[in-house]
Image (cartoon, rainbow, N blue to C red; front, side, top):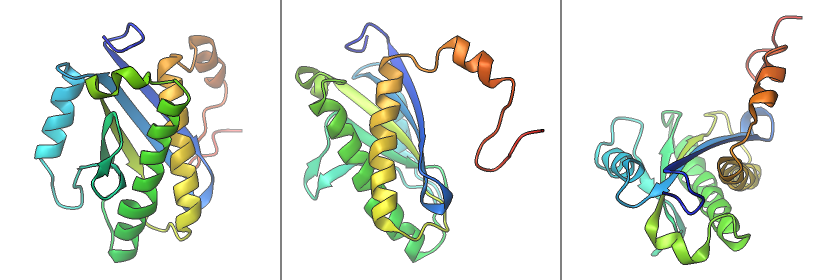
Length: 172
């Protein structure tokens, strides 16, 4: 069980707009759970364009709970790789640390938990500071949403009236 009575908590958040927006999905679970099995499996099975790695605040200082960064967009060149592995990854690490600092994730339990962060970085991203800020906020928000089991079913059903996303405006 996670610190909140759930075996696994799933979170989602989208922050920002345009090419520098962040879309984060999180999985938070206990060491020894299926979440940790998924964490270790993903780390051990990189493939072309997708190389999961442990998220760090600084070299040699991984964020806790240990967080696996999994890119959702294949790396398209040096600039995309640098902004993904640099600004986006730093934002994810800071967002996890923000969640711990705010008590969303209890400090006393960080060594017993694992996080998978699935991270979208648009290959057209061009502002590393915006990418950092958006990924920081999206990670923190995704973790809060997982803890609070958001969205509610009522919110999901209300959104059914007009589904849309940044790539589809919906029917009018």
